[in-house]
Image (cartoon, rainbow, N blue to C red; front, side, top):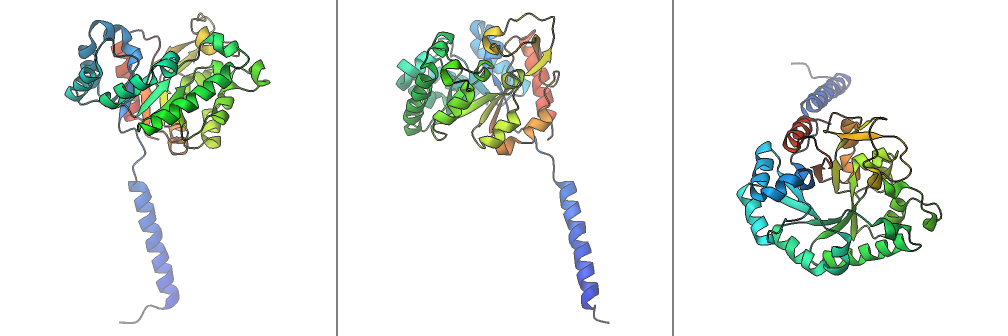
Length: 299
């Protein structure tokens, strides 16, 4: 048998390597969301009348994670038992600014029992936002809360609407969201980005992912349709910069390019995806449509 010369050997080796590489790339599956979650505010009406039954329906839809916005007079121990019964995890919950300010220790104790890894503040009162030092007081509180929660093994975070992207006179025209990002310690304060509200505000989530890589371990996933005929029922959340009307839509039935956004999940640091619809037409139908879309989405 004749020995293969060096040139032939190299050419053959390169061809084989390229073939193997192409095969590996072709076999590499697209990314998808392993555990789709839902913010239970979406089904708040049903939660009030049938707390346990609603959680069971959410699990039956296919969701693996939930985010609470109140326990509806159930004890943390009972909430944990209901979650375990239905095979659900609750990595996060929302609590009011007043809880962060006045009942933080109790909130941390409850979170440990239920199994939350995150506690999120979703709102800053408009009156405080208009005060000269309102945003600074919020940033200071968030840092203190984050320091205390870190000692308890829980991450504190803040959830945006659109008003954080209105230039604030008290901040010299700076965007409050940028101020909070700059004035809070990334190790103490995470951001749960509402991908709908930031988009409605005319901002680019990808630009924030790039500038603040890893700062967004949780996101809210809801869609939006511009509609000039829609009333401004969301004005409190939208702020003054949003001039057009619109309405919320089930995920995948609006204008947001989810595939493109989630292709950058690694840069953002996203670990948890929570479907939310503040104004569902039919809550259980809506969360099913959104679940099916996200469960099958490849990016």
